[in-house]
Length: 99
Image (cartoon, rainbow, N blue to C red; front, side, top):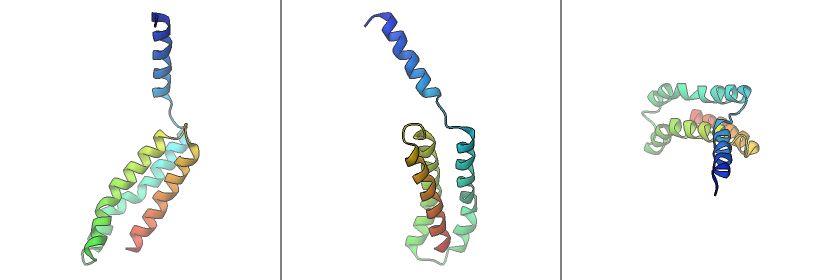
């Protein structure tokens, strides 16, 4: 490869790293992460619950943060997948509250 083609490919890589979702989608992600702030309250109320429930409650914030990160990263490539992840975040919050 000559230097011109290397420069071209490096510019493409830089542009791909800079791509971000629109601001409104970032706001949707942040709003979807707000129920994670209730995690300590849910954990204190579930001390008398079964051991499996406490394990699920301990993993809830990790799942929520990972889902938000993946929804953020895949917005341009797979827009529908981002919305599925956001929907699953809300459904998982509903399930955790019912525990």
